[in-house]
Image (cartoon, rainbow, N blue to C red; front, side):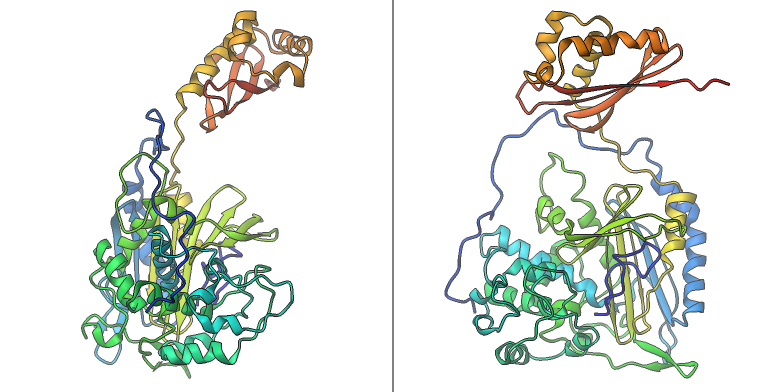
Length: 529
């Protein structure tokens, strides 16, 4: 698939376009372990949740943005949707799915989504891992014996394992657009390719490089381990359990009125692109789906957040979904810009079939794109916001949206806000005790809440002297502010006084009765007029 550099900038193309072997090692982390858990844990939640109402307000602007994108990029048809949690709350389309027959594009039109297929293949691998049928650390040659004869780039290169294929760190070269044209090749072609030997651009586990071939091999592993073609396994174990009944692998399986035809823009006119059939490389880019169907998949990914005590539901564990959305080999892009074009360094990496980017303001975006002759697609979801957006189009190697415009609408016009972490019971208790300690410093309270390292790191005399500076600097404490938690055992709050604030930061120990191991006090005086 075309690897359009979505891991670099938020204003760029969105994420990256573009029978079993006898030896069956057991997976070290397979299955769902049974363990006790906290009954008092409070999951992050939305405060005054008005996401649905805010998105409805910007719907006309989104429609306009999609229509303008179609016009300026000469795109025949675009379909677009927004998911809030488990619901497709906005779906729209513009233009034509089939120019020759005059069929309009709709949210139920079936577009080829190309490399967006990769995360389905990754999900199948993790499902097999969770069932104990393979391990991510298994050498790929366990399942594809032909891999054992590869000539590696260096003598110290690790043997390629399944995780290397998932994270695109096997050392294979970036293979766009060559890989696109292999979509309908046979399994024998793929095995012949391996048997004849592959070229390496890097040593294994050294660097990320986008590889369609790696995901074709993952599809082959799914087939060998499951005992059925990977297409059948993914359909039975992922698509149908999610209710994705209008998602297909083969163009001949799509009802004629649903199938979107692909085009390229050349000589100031649209020209038909060949509609590729399914084959061995389908695991890297073969799926055909609709906005309505794909929204169910996006909702499933969003359901992984936040970690919580609810019962599991869906074809993969929430923890495994979060694992898919965790970047490997992350890189810092110091010159990146935000959707307003302002400098905003980002940290980006590839997870398991997904690209993950975190921006300078803390915004986390999980995404992937896809492109094949005749098609371009993108999806992006924001785990902390419970929001996902997706768009498909039928023009060769073309992004279907202006992500910068849509991002502005979501995060500026609609002013969407992320979940907030509630204060844990132990943090709240220690906050109240620290407030009392700071004002009185009672020996009995010291012994109860301070960890054994506390006075070893800084003497009691120094601590006391620091506290005595409070009334001298900012006067009498008048009000205790709300605690802002960072996690279950760390947070900060303010003591509001006559002439300024006392900022109190503390973190607790891992002991069962968690005690204060660190206490930092700083002063912020009121600005004088």
